[in-house]
Amino acid sequence: MELSEAIGKDVKDELEELKRREEETAAKLRRLEREKTATEEELEVIEERRKRSVFSALDAVKKGYFSKLLGKKGIKVLAPLVGGVEEKTMGRVTTIPKISKKDLTEIEILPMIEGYSYIRINYDTRSNEYRYEVIEPKLLPEEVDILEVLKEILVESLETIAEEDERVRETYLRRLVDGLLRELGVNLHPISKERIMYYVLRDFIRFGAIDTVMIDPNVEDISCDGVQIPFYIYHRKYGSIPSNLKFDDEGELDSFVVWLAQRCGKHISVAQPMLDATVPDGSRLQATLGKHVTKRGSSFTIRRFRENPFTPLDLLRFKTMNDEMMAYLWLAIENGQSMLICGGTASGKTTTLNAILLFIPPQMKIVSIEDTRELNLPHDNWVPTVTRAGFGSRNPVTGKAMGEIDMFDLLTSALRQRPQYLMVGEVRGTEAYVVFQAMATGKSAYTTFHAEDVQAMVHRMENDPINLPRALVSALDIVLMQAQVKVGTDMTRRVKSLTEFIGVDPESDELITNTAYSWNPADDTFNYSGHSYVYEKISITRNWSQKRMEQEVRRRIELFKYMNKIGLDKHTQVAKIISSYYKDPDAVYKKAKGVLARG
Image 1: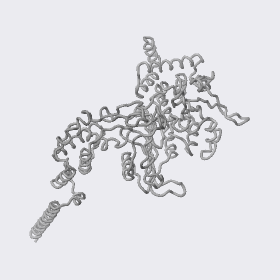
Image 2: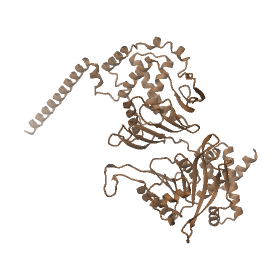
Image 3: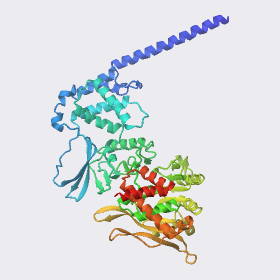
Image 4: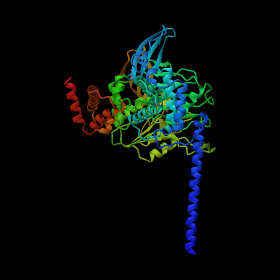
């Protein structure tokens, strides 16, 4: 009985297996029948993809479809068709066009990707303003058609690769495109192929329409304010100037903003049409989608940050401050004096903060708190933290969405980590109270704050929404006041003052301050007041005489000259010298003196 049951079960299983195979075969036959008679419309919605195959989109039917598409566009074998490429482009991938308007004068032209993309600064004599021109390879109509076809196939067949190295991804894409062109039977002129390849690489692994601007080291901000409005570029040398870039189609701009959000690993939609994010290269993105909050259409602003941040040496070269002030900041930060960096919008607060934080001794525990990641330190013992948006509706009691982590939460968590140095990207609300409490309990805290002068800073601190008591404000040691100013004909940044907070007058309840250094706009120089309470405090802590303190300031000024002399241009190199000085100051100073003495 058991044997017959077992045999019956085997037969049943075999019948089920045969039935399943029969159904699969029938489905396969139906699919082949559909593909055989497929129209162009059906081809566009074919769901079956062979993801493992490099040319998954090029099955027999699709190959026929794309060949038909190429035929419709008048493209067969392209070697004879673009045989005149060399005459039209003088044998170059990108030909720099001559300025056609008589009102425009070329000021300078710089290559971004040599031979491929350039930027040109022009001056419009009629409107008396500079213009930013992006120059990229100009495609022939036939090349535009091929690019469209290639992009369509690549979107279908491209696999995601985890490799972050751009060269590896570029090699992968070039191999794919070469194979696709062979499969399609398209023979391109080498120059024509390079021009098409430039746009494939630009749109698939770089930054698309804004790629050239994202490469330009002189660009601080990229601003797109809506459809059919030129992008405005904030140039380090020429200020805010219009460019020749713009989106003419509303749908195209919406798609680009969504794509930018995805590149940042974030989501933007009609439900959440505003976004703050960090671009993969470290820049800061603020974007809006559609006309829900910005009535001229989608918009985005990208605040550029250098991959290699500015160092104290760069600030000295830009004359943001002088070497004596930088030595003062070095001593102050080394000895844990808390500091607030104040200034207006685009005054360079974060740049200065990032540069002077290189003076933190390398073994110290550091915690930074930011809305979007901006600080970049070479220290190993550093915990960079960023806020996180929540999900769903807000709690009526706390005012926070589920899972939201704000600066106050991060700050409370940071204090439990026992950091010696605490950095907050920018204080503007209740988190200021915790920062100043940390200062009062002996933590060294550094942050930026929007205020045009010391009096305005104190006024904002003591009123809504911060409401700090004056006794806590006095826990601050130094206020660095920075501004964007005009020196001659150029816009530049200057540290207007270094003000020390000494305490509160018990009788008048007024803050007692001392301006140690100040900037003189008449001749663009910096003046020392002759007395510093920070130097006094350090002298007492380190048991140094006034002569020893003056000697230490001079030694650090000499070190700046030495680092400039040997041509250090990376923040890691500067950090290495500073770290070496902390370990063996006499040996490093002796070496610096030797280099300077040789001239």
